[in-house]
Amino acid sequence: MEKLRMMTGGGQKVTFKSSRVFFNNDGQFRSRIFPQGGVGSSQWFLLCLGLLNLILLIIMIILGVTCAKVKEGSLATSNELNYLNHSKVTESEEEANKALDSALKNHTLLKKQIEQQKAINDAYQRQIETLRTEKTSLQSNISFFEGGCGKCHTPWIFYNSSCYFFSNLESADVKKNWVESKADCVNRGADLAVIDDQEEQKFVSDTIKAVKSNPSSWTNGFWVGLTDMETEGTWVWINNVTEVEQRYWMDGEPNNHGLDGENCCITAYSSFNPWKTRYDGKCQLHNLHWLCEMPSS
Image 1 (tube, helix red, strand yellow):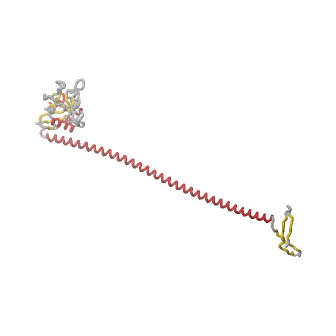
Image 2 (cartoon, rainbow, N blue to C red):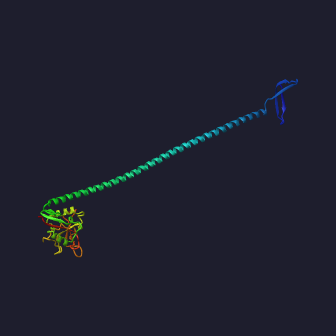
Image 3 (cartoon, rainbow, N blue to C red):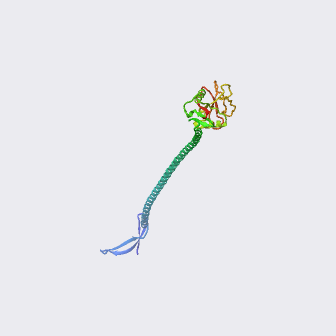
């Protein structure tokens, strides 16, 4: 095999080998020369390598874009899931808050209802106590009237061989001063009451409690037949018996209050002490109910 050498334009040597010898159709000798190596072979190799790198780069770009899309889709899905979870948590929290508000409102309403019911029960209890007191008073009145049945005319009350007239039982509106009250008793065949002993004192006090709505006030008291008109400070009953008991007077009484003085006795009811029931009052000025007494028939 013959080797041929040629010079390139740049002065480099290129060696060729003849691999085939043949004759063409006209009988002329021909030969084909193949390059053995050198610069041309390297260029082809580099070109192929570049194409391969380009293909790999394109593949890597495609893979990168695909991964980015997948990651973006995954992130979007994750965001959607987070949003849905957050929405569910928010919705659950709102429902829990609504339930709590409703429970608090129900608790407040129930508390008010309990307080109202307690107030109603307290009012009922007070009414029961009032009714019990009225029942006791009515029973006392019944005993008074039954005891005097056939012995004293209505509305007189019998007690211990005497009949007593509490003027408010006849008329709650009619009131008189001491002098007028004494005159009314006389017109009825009696006189203002004389309280002789503790039993009679208790009877008068209990009856005033039974027949008066506010028996402890001196303005709801009754004139009785006791005065110190003759001698200031010396209290004498209308039967000329001098009163020597001081325990029946309310604390601070008699005080002879005012310029004209207070010379006539008023008896009322005392819830804290049944013996302290008397006040001194102005005979001509104060208008009150009165208590008459006369022997039973």
